[in-house]
Amino acid sequence: MQSKLNLNEKLVAQARASAAGVAADTQKFIDRHTTVAVERTICRLLGIDEINAVEVPLPNVVVDHMQEKELLAVGAAYCIGNAMIETGLDPQEIAAGIDRGELDFSKLAPNPASDIRAKLAAQVEATAGRIKSNAARRKEFLAEYGEDDSPYVYVIVATGNIFEDITQAKAAARQGADVIAVIRTTGQSLLDYVPFGATTEGFGGTYATQENFRLMRAALDEVGAEQKRYIRLCNYCSGLCMPEIAAMGALERLDMMLNDALYGILFRDINMQRTVVDQYFSRMINSYAGIIINTGEDNYLTTADAVEEAHTVLASQFLNEQFALLAGLREEQQGLGHAFEMDPDVEDAFLLELAQAQMAREIFPKAPLKYMPPTKFITGDIFKAQIQNALFNAVTVITGQKVHLLGMLTEAIHTPFLSDRALAIDNAQYIERTMRHLGEEIVFKDGGIIQSRADEVLEKAAASLEDIERQGLFATLEKGMFAGIKRARDGGKGLAGVTQKAEQYFNPFIDIMKGGPAV
Image (cartoon, rainbow, N blue to C red; front, side, top):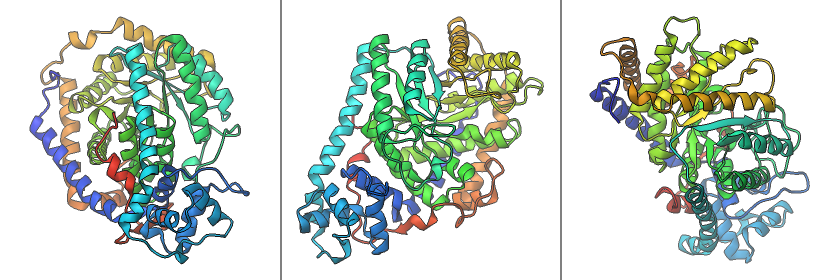
């Protein structure tokens, strides 16, 4: 890509190197620890599913038992594989036995690690094969239907009822949406378990469950066949169940996942130690499954000023890039986030937004950047909202953003009607069609407002990253650099679920998935 901003490439390299240093330092902590969510994910990937008589998911039953018997440090793979050797049962039967009180991991004789790994091999390979098959199927659809380089038109559904969501999602896909994101019910990120089955009673969104994923995937495939387009499905693997929901998404062929530990730390008060460990395994699963992750930098600008704090967005993008690479996510799978959130009363705000978006595009040229619409300064004036969204759509097209979340003219009023989505899609498609190659036709004035703004943001971001590398990520988060929010290293939700790995610990799925995408 030819630079329009004449960015200081040495400064870009310096910022990227600092971010890599932060990620490598944090990875040392990650490699030494596991969490209850990671171990529940291993249970799920080994085939444990369903709920007990009081609706507790069986993966939770197994891992709660491990915690009670002080076995979390040796890991679910070790405990389940050893139990398979000793009892002759499969993982699902083992979970049921624990639930009935008939099986106790701590009372079983230990077997050699090599024997345990060999016992698990068939189930590990079967699960990996299912995920690989899903990734291959996605590629087959894309090869059959084809797609151009236009932005992915991304809209949300959030009724709380998966069956109503399906009705709305199919309508949006027929109206031209490329990505359907099913918003999770309010507060699900704080649940330390994953609900089971199809759900109809969410608030502000719909529960993320494997059955809901399966139902929506089937519905979008149906519309895709009708429209001769591949419709992507997006959900959220963030909060206290990051890797579990990533695994469920991989098993049901989701295409995008909101996946960002920094978002959980800042905006959901998830303990930082817990969530960085969870993020690593969740991103490894997403990588293997060919899923695009979306990160949450846009949220910084809902609490901090978009003009003054733009450099924190860029700094976080650099960090998310490096953490993603360590987990095996290719640049093409990194939907790094940012947003069009400046006060519309700021003079030349459009130019400043254009500078920020172009800078992200040039610094992360392979990333399918996730660009968020204006929300903070949207009011009940739907006519102004339509103009604000049109300006946002123009920046999207001019700078080549890829994951294009549509703004709704009724953003500040109510959950969108089908007609609101239709108007938003019409707005985006009109601008994409009439400005299709405008970005290729224009250049920016040397030393002008746009180039100067990009230089300023880059310089501040590089300085911030240098400071973060010096202090460490955890210390930086305690001081409130991002979004003006301070979080304690030992505070927040989920710390009790973190433990240091024992010598015999192993995770057989990391061995398979660390190589990157399955296909």
